Length: 375
Image (cartoon, rainbow, N blue to C red):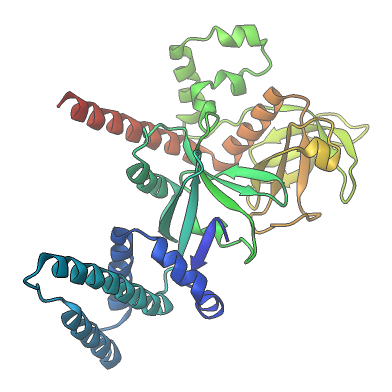
C-alpha cells in the first residue's frame, strides 16, 4: 500500500514478508535502532525474569555481533570497504532481529509512508501509543519545517473521494488499521489553515447569524473573550448552528433539502410539517461512532447540487455503504461552518487543549530557532 506499508501482525509477516522487509529497509538507521531497542524492552517487560529461549537468543545475537565486528585492516581503502560491508550486514542483522521481535511484540506498530506537499515522502515507524501530535513532532524534526499550528496529517480515500485531517489527540494506528489490504488510501503531511479556525475566528461560529461585515470588524480581545466564554468554562458551548442542507438518498444520486439543527449530541432534522421545537426534532446521527470527511468533485460523482459536500461515517467503512451520511451545502462558507461546528460538538474541550498545545509548541520552536539564528 502506498500510505501504509506494513504492520507487525502475524498475517502480514507470513502473507507479505517481502513487503514488510522492504518497508523496514526504508527506515532510517536511527529509526530502525529505536524500533529494535523498543521491541527489546517490550520483550523484557513481557517476560517474567526471562526464559531459557530468550537468554539463548540474546547470547546468540551477541555472538553474531562479535563475529560481525570487523578488524581494522592496515590499508585505508580496504578498511572503508570492510566498514561498508559491516554496516550493510549490521542493518540486515537489525532487520532480522526486528522481524523476530515484531512477531513477539504485543504493541501494534505500523510503518507509514507519509507524502509531502512537494511530492517527496518520509517513512516512519508509528506504534499504537503515539498520538498524531507526537507523529507531527517526529515529522517536524525530519523535515525542519516551521512548526506552525496548521500542520496536519491528512488521510485521503480515492475510492470515496474524501479526506480528513486527523485530530492531534487521536492515536494514529487506530484509523490506519481500518484500511483494507489493497487500499489506495494515502497519508499527507500538509498545512491546513482551517484546522483551528474556530479559535482564531470564533465569531464565525458563535455569531454566525450576524452579517459578515459586522464579524470582520471584531478585534483580537473580543475574539479571546468569545473563546474563553465558550471553551473556558465548566461546560463546552456548541454553536447553535441550523439551516437547510441537501441530503443524498440511499443508493441514489438524488438530493433532497432538509432543515438540520446541530446539538452537542448529534445532528437532528425537522420532519415535514413539524416545527423546530426540540420535541419535534428527529435524530439524524450521533457523533460517538462517526468521523467527518470533506469530499472532492461530488457534483460530478453523485450529481450533488454543489461541490461543497461532507459526509459522516465510521472510520472502518472504506467503501460505499448505506451507513454513510452524505450532506451538501449551498456554499463554501456554510461548509466551513458545519464541518468545524461538528468537530467542536464531537471533540469538545479536547479540541481546545489540542490548540493550546500546538500554540505552545509553535512558540517554543520560534524561540529555539530565533536563538540559533542570532548565533
